[in-house]
Amino acid sequence: MKFCYVIIEGQRDEKGYIPSAVFEGRSGHYPMTGQGKHAEPWHWGETVELAEEVCARMNERMGITKKEALGMVIESMRGLDH
Image 1 (spheres, rainbow, N blue to C red):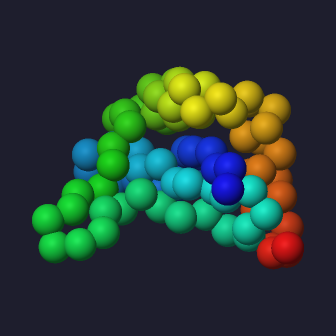
Image 2 (tube, rainbow, N blue to C red; image 1 turned 60 degrees about the vertical axis):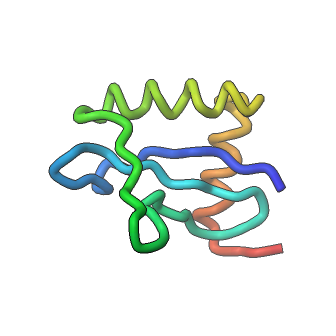
């Protein structure tokens, strides 16, 4: 299943912006806040610009274009799982 990362401007803590994963064909997003006893949230920058740059690089490494990522994010906002 394809997915991309996205930065949501309100999703941050004192250490910076926390990315979310968005999955193709699923509604919503999944913040990378850490799972388990010793897990920490992911932080991709203290500014939204830096966090978005890291996000774009990570998506590119996975072979996800900006257009594909935008499509997945828009689809996730529709609230329709299929």
